[in-house]
Structures are given as C-alpha cells and as structure tokens.
Image (tube, rainbow, N blue to C red; front, side, top):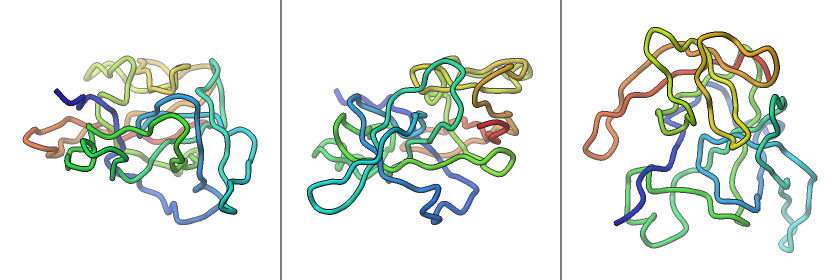
Length: 172
C-alpha cells in the first residue's frame, strides 16, 4: 500500500517568482513539501547549476525556508498519483525552497504539515519544530520563526475533503 501521509503546501499568497526568495536546495534526509529547513552553504552542481545545502532547523531558529516543489514525483508510484500526499522529496535530490517574509508571506497547509495539529478555538499560532514541521500553540512563542493561524479552509484532494490552515508568517 502506498504511503499517502506526506504533507504538502496547498497554495501560497506571495510572488515567489523572485529569485532572491526562490532557490534550489538539497538535504541528506527525505523531506515533505511544507517542511521547513535552514539554508546552508551554496554549492555548484556538475551541470553548472547551484543548490544550497539544507538541514532541519535547530530549536528556536529563524531565517527558515519552506520546502515547496511541484508534486510531480520521482518514482513511478508518485507519478501515477495525482494526490500530493503521495509525494515527497527523496534525500540527496534537488527541491525548491522559498523564503518567508514576516507579515507578507501566507501559506495554506493541511494538518499533516503539523507535528502537533491545531485545536479549533484554542490554537492561534504555529512555531517550527526541529523536525521542520509546524507545532500549534495557543500563545505566540518567545523565540524562533512562527506563524499566526489566520483561517481554516477545506479543499478537495483525491476523494476527500481535507481541512487546511491558512498561516501568516509573523517572525522569520
């Protein structure tokens, strides 16, 4: 049975065509779209391109980058599925990373993007854990990158109605 529990980004509300906030990254671990990473050293590839070495963030890190690559798939199984929950970025493969700007960047993600999912009526914020996933909270964290939970939404994915959360970057 295929693994369809990977997180993903539904949509973003910022112009990410700007090369200053749209880069290529590579990591030594598998990553889902919607996870956050720390951007490291710039390296040149054999074909003349470039990519940044990315790692999972440390506790209370800032200047985090969102993993967000079109969910096309690198395996036959991933390519056969139109459901983005089947997609992930295998370790040592290139993926897209997006810079987040405080008070300007918005993203929409499902509960699978959270290590600790939001509780309706209680969770107002989300910080980023050391596994690169979001952690819902009732109060804003004192340090590190965090988002305010602006709204909830429902989108059709596969044969399901999936609840999503619209987040605004507050500090990065």
